[in-house]
Amino acid sequence: MSALEQQLEAFRQQVTSVDSEADLQQLKVAFLGKKGSVSQLRRQMGKMKPEERKAFGAAFNRCKNQIESELEDRRKHLDQQARLRDLERTEDLTMPPTRPRFGTLHPITRTRRELLATFRRLGFDVAEGPHIEHEAYNFDALNFQPEHPARDEQDTFFVRGQHGEEGSGIVLRTHTSPVQIRSMLTRQPPIRVVAPGTVFRRDDDPTHSPMFHQIEGLYVDRDVSMADLKATLLQFTSAFFGTGLDIRLRPSFFPFVEPGAEFDMQCPFCRGDGCNVCKTTGWIELGGSGMVHPAVFESVGIDPEEYTGWAFGFGIDRMAMLLHGIPDLRLMFDGDVRFLEQFPC
Ligand code: DAH
Image 1 (cartoon, rainbow, N blue to C red):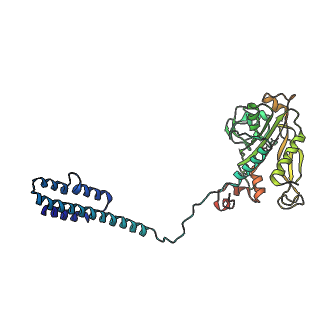
Image 2: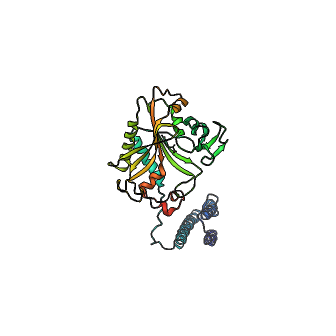
Image 3: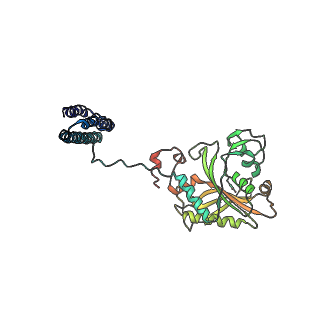
């Protein structure tokens, strides 16, 4: 009997200093486990007389139950303490939760996606090309003569080679037009693609950035005409800016098209009346375009007697500025969240 009481006493001394679930479990094993000190005492029962055994059995069970219930009390106590510690850490449970901050799509990304959606609806595929491009694709195959000023170091970032080593240089592409070459080398007419992407030029002022974005369009098939070009551009501007805005083509020169034209759209703000966005002209210059030059077809192995085609290219950044009324190109690339947050998705 007194052995049981001693064990209970010993247990009580230890249980009050236990402060983790794992230690509590260990203590339980030490007393009540198969080889635990209380369980050991049970063996003595074998040598006892029947009445003694009965009384010991009852006392043993009481002791065991007592230990179990005190273990449980201790566990509850530990739980409660842990909860209180949590409460101390949380300063004010009535405070509203901090909301997660969601990012927004950059206005250029949004504009690019909208442009692509519009051209997809018109039946165009999307093509892409590398930022680091062969000079042969960026210039030569596009019919730029070796002495063409656009190749000059003032405009072009050369990665390898220099102006003069015709065809062998590697450049940061100065426009998306090399994707025309890549598309014509990998596809068979009819070809109808648009190619959006980043381009690079050694330019840096309020209206020019050394890195900007363009979108290129190309259509090659039998009997493609300048009328198709104008109709497609008009379809595009109406889908994008709404109907009722006229477009116009002005003769211009680009080595890879003949005839070449710049295309303008009536200003979507004043609808042609003249305002400060269009510098009172009523027109907004969008980009360049024209009929694919026979020399370009020859450079990619397409027969210019059999096929004709048109191409266009314009700046995505300017389009985004127009759409959202953004006054300075540099805002687009500063990464200032105060600016970006103004374009919630
Ligand atoms: N690549 C020209 C540029 O960056 C733009 C351009 C003009 C693209 C005429 C065309 C085009 O496809 O036909 O200035």
